[in-house]
Length: 103
Image (tube, rainbow, N blue to C red):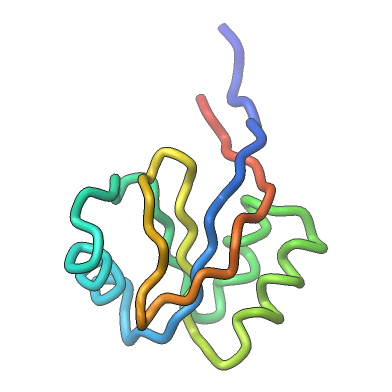
């Protein structure tokens, strides 16, 4: 039996301002109800850097934190999440090459 694997992935990244994670998911449900919400990560508050480090190399983490600017929320959509072009509240920052851990 083999252990977990880190697989390369193009992860779609969005930035916005939200009071809480549930409000982000409610917004996504309104905007794109066909998304696979199990394939979406919402990052907020002081834990953003540490959470980003679980997906991206240091230079990408820094680039995304700079791009966050005055927003307080990053949304990561894994390749199997579905298509979301962005919205008035979630600005697309593009795709970032990262890794996904699979058992």
